[in-house]
Image 1 (cartoon, rainbow, N blue to C red):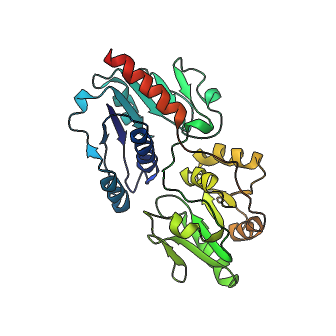
Image 2: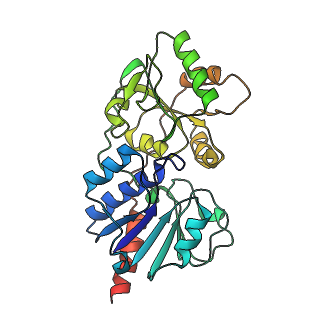
Image 3: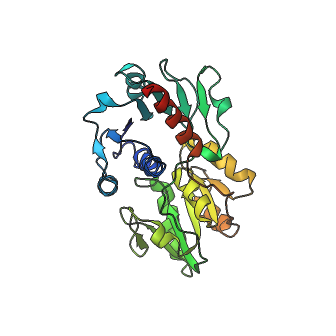
Length: 294
């Protein structure tokens, strides 16, 4: 019934496909129909995760009722707005701005309010705490050792200058043990499996994370966090966290980011809870599918 257009490459990162994979699991658990993925997946752990879900490629997408496009690429967005014979077209967006003509719904998969981000869009907007898609196997945080610090900074390598400052900090703070994904973790840090990060993160006392989808997972898990903004599109997530007095820092600051991290980790705080069932999205799409089949 659904085709999802999303990529997981070195350029796009893993986030688009991984959050759609979480949505697929929720969709299936709710009794939804078939789902296909249309896109390029080059990141090994993402490909492995999709295989574990039994997710097929979009052959037979002509039979689908709903197209969901999760991409920042303008060409992909425009093509999704007009190609194929779909009863409903959904654009996934967490930035705001212009929506190409042809989409019926904008889905902002974040806990902050989304309506004001799309003033020129005349269709339906879905956003807020009940629109966030999170995987079903997230643990609840149990307080770990006070010396272990988790670091999650997106699907690819973090900004070079910021990583260098963290390495310097880790060498100076020998009482702290840093843990990061194995694909980029420096020598001497604990290596986290990128396909199952919460197995290790759940043993940490605090988490330093970029303002991406890991923020919502951390909110569901309940671990104290510090948010590091490493890209412009993470600002709204950071503002949402700051409203709850969670420490937020700009990793692109001209100041010494290592000093900012050290000071912020002392004030790490839990985020407001997010249940991650994407119930508003699932309810709307199932209703649209039923209408299209009658």
